[in-house]
Amino acid sequence: MDLRSALRTIIATLVGIGLVVLIIILLVKAFSGGGAPANEVNVGKYGDTNATATLLIDGPTNLDQDHRQVRISVSGTQNQIDIISGYQGDIIKSQTYPNNSAAFTVFLQSLQLLGFSKGTRSTIDYRGYCPTGDRYLYSFSDDNSELFSYWSTSCGGQGTFRGNPPAVRSLFEDQVPQRDLVTLTGNTDVTL
Image (cartoon, rainbow, N blue to C red; front, top):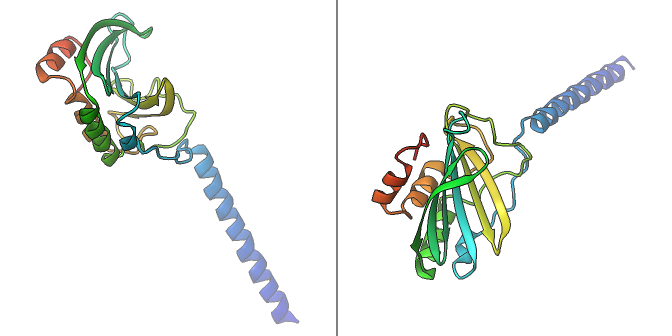
């Protein structure tokens, strides 16, 4: 009898410890803000559509009059760079370049291989993160319907984007002639 009682006590203790560990793991995951992985979109298959891939670089948190954002949008017909002033989204400079379906298809396949469509779903608002650095928003839409939007920061380790941030940003920057990129972004505190 004493052996059975001892075994029951040991088993009950082990089950109790296991439940406590499980509850702690679930609580940590729930409050970590990571969110669930999103269903990955294969952007490489959108070369012959009205899709648009966009990178928005949101500069350091500062005075509204000094705040700048740089947005690069790439579609099958054009590449566009916008310099945005303030937090209300006023475009102060814009330049457009022609694009074609073949170039867009290669660009999208390159993005796919760099993990552009990898991220986690989350309701976390990116604004305010990394206030002395930059916030990067990666989005993809088709016929004005957003298929995904993820973000990261220059402060590292923050955000919902799970691709290769430096390589993706470099690929977007390469869609604008280098001389224009330098000229258009020269008076901003946005890091390219």
